[in-house]
Amino acid sequence: MLLAAPWMPGCIADAQEDRCVRGAEFCGGQCVDLEHDVDHCGACGRTCAVGFRCDEGECRCDLPFTQCAEGCFDLSRDPLHCGTCDDACMPGIACMEGLCEGDCAAGLLRCDGRCVDPRNNAEHCGGCGQACGAGEACVEREGAAACECAPSPTWPCPETAISAAGQGGRIDVNDVVTLTTSDGDDLVVVAGVFGGAPVDFGGQTGTPVGDDDLFIAAYHPTLSLAWLYTIGANARSQQAHDLEVAADGTLYFAAAIRADANQNVSPGDLPAVAWRNAYQGALLEIDPRVGATTRVPRLALVQGTTGNQYLDAVVVTGGDVVVAGHQNGDTTFLTGCTTTVGRNSFVATIDPQTGTLDCHGLLSAGNPNNTNRADPNDLDLEVDATGAMHLIGSATEAEIRPADGVGPPISLQLDDGSTVTTGFDVVYRPSGNGYLLDHALILGDEPGNRAARLLRGARAEGGSLALAGWFSGTAEVVLRQEGQADVVCAANLITGTSRQAVVLGLAPGASCPTWAWSSGGTGNDSAHVVEPIPNGFLVLGEYDLRISAGSLEAERPDQGQGYFLLAFTESGGARWLLGDLEGGGVPSTSRRGGVAALLGSEDVELFWAGVQGAPGPTLPAWSEGTGQAFVGRFRLGL
Image 1 (cartoon, rainbow, N blue to C red):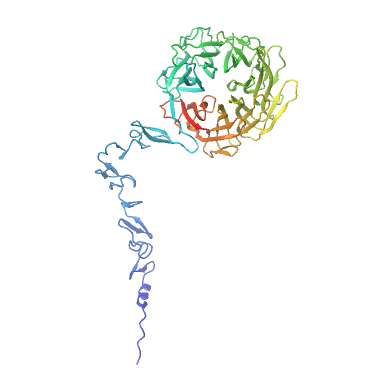
Image 2 (cartoon, rainbow, N blue to C red):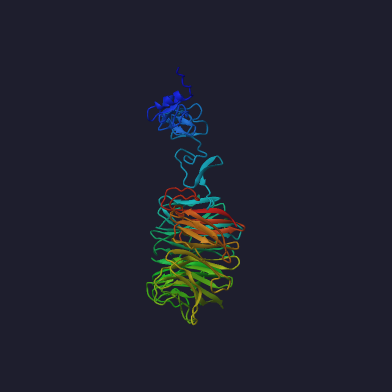
């Protein structure tokens, strides 16, 4: 008798699993397709939710559904996910073809088929389609919504800002200063040129009468307009240059005015002068008081019989008003100076009441030929703590000549015969009733290398002086006095082919720099403005890759040029660095724009003025125009 084999669990199941066709798996007592079975999607027992299908072993939304974070939804008709996963219609409003149909709740607007809050929506700020710019947020202030700067980690937002927007015209800013008037008003004064169309300067419109008119606009620290003054002549362009404030608050404005003899110069309250069809250096002395019943400036003109004369810089020291300028084609207007025919720059004391220039031992700068001169766009004047006068600028093949009989000239070239541009600081010491040439400090390079620029100088509260500019090549700083051997103050200050920003610091009475900084980058960097701040200096410039100062660093790889603010102590220590302000929303790289002035003590109020053609992250929104000027107030804790 044969005995039956014992039953073993799993034998039948194993036999059935073996009978599943290739590509199927045995799950729950049956063969299933893990690639497409919604109850076993990708693995036995993995079930897809309602509205999903199993596609290649993954649970995916079934058409016409779209997968959102909460599940699958029909965006064409789901009121909680209408058009997109995150857009919900207001209660009681249906979603039809991806748009919320019906009225929005109180306070909301329907924009592009959605109910939005115009008080905080950056795409519809204050109304449908009113989008904020890059770096801006929509903020409600006193019941009205507006786009405002959203602060970045590297740049502060202005506390307040205004724009002077030209309606298809143009406007350039040349300088900005802060001052306190004799009756105690604090003002921010901006000067430049405008033309082509009327310009709103913040509640008052200036209408140009010529191609480019001068403007001087004074603002309260809140940036409300205090007063506006414009000067122009029919079909003529004017030039704005430098603002200076005397100790008593009197304002001086160095410019150049051009008008034909038969033209009227607006405004008509300017003193009557003998105009001619050429630029004439103009110095305006202005009472800046807000409550002044009249604002008739005293006008001093630098007038020759031929050619053009210009005033580029002004400084007030020891009761003297000293100006720097340049001319071509005439040598008769300078009293006490011998100049050569051609283009020359000059430094002289000027009488604002008569316009008389007196060299008083100051020097003319230039070259005997008619092609080279100290660059007028780069001239600046400063007075150090010892009372010495500093003429700061750049020149090509130039030399500084003293007044008649005072002494030999000083060459501003490191290499005789070289045609490269050098930056210079020519120093004059007080002597009797005037100033005598003492020495020249030259930022120069080896022959064949590129240009140096020293643009501006500033004197700190402690009496130190700082000079800011840029340089390309291999630089050294040389001290030169006629009859003595050159002294190399700093060799190989900058080495390389890229343009670098540079700042030189001079202690009171020092001839050679006591400290120096260069940006250290590999891109095109430059420093445009240096201003005094409590216990130091602030430098405004631009860079396009990287700058560093001590342990501080700012980078902009592959982003184009941006602006930086760098603060130094009087001894050259880096205090803080702000960088990465986009180049598309900032002033131009010329001296027109990108200027700054400061007011305050521990928390510095920075009043920054310039020109831009497009909105920037820290600036107000603009109306249409080819150029808009702005003034912004920033608070910087030091």
